Image (cartoon, rainbow, N blue to C red; front, side, top):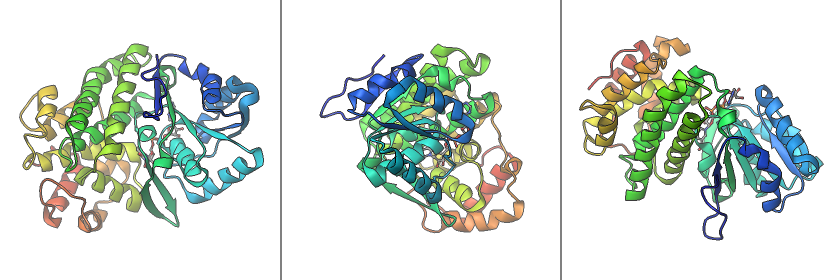
Length: 354
Ligand code: NAD
């Protein structure tokens, strides 16, 4: 079911529905494309091949080498395919890693993008691109990076294993939670953030109880779209800074790191932004948004301890140093001592400090 028809003033076309991926040839034609390059990770190559088959003569090739954190050497290899196949459109089927590769190509070529997300990370809804070169991750924000079409097919996200479903959902919820106290938030972003959080609070337990419940999967995908959209509209704070530090400098996995840190970062900021975070308490109960999220994460069997991701306790001092140099704007002042204590609690899997 299309959420919006394409118009000149609303450049992103967003569609939801079981089997919506099967309209891919029509979507490519709507963009005026006749040579689409399909992208995926090696793990999701079969899904990419299915899309190429559905495209028939509109497919120019398949490139299944997308990797986490969008390494520039992978983008360069994909760019060679774009040139060889004379692609006039890219189609990314997968999570944030594959979507990142499509965005990196669009940034270099301005080719239109169709994205078929299979996780809840939300990258499809943002004009943000993170790229890694020589171990350094840099992030840019550019309109050319925002995909033109998003097709949310619950059939695809139903194969997301339960553990990844939970961590990816908490990753999405983190965008919405931090949007609630963003310095540049608006009534519209507040509304979308609450919509996104509500979709996951209501939908995630259903999805976990029955991973192939397509109605619940679609509801959570709508949540992912709302959470991703606010991520693209407002600035993020302490939680995202901590995740970028641990992902970039200690190679911790993206969604799991978000899932573990979210209750701790929100508990930290609840002292300074309890009114802004009230919608989280309204949804989950209690009077501290961080503790409420911790309870929700526990109920969902989310990972709770950074040590379980392989982070060495001896790295916590350096992580605290890195996370407190050039901090993002944050409702509660960030001190090295407080962040060191927060990281210790998150490392051990303790209840967040309030
Ligand atoms: P991912 O794309 O790295 O996927 C993780 C693994 O799960 C991959 O092997 C993938 O093939 C597999 N997978 C994905 N969907 C699946 C499904 N439905 N069934 C089975 N397997 C599936 O994970 P992610 O968390 O979606 O993305 C993380 C990356 O996205 C990070 O690099 C992060 O920085 C980036 N990101 C960017 C933005 C942005 O706005 N630029 C936003 C969020 C995330």
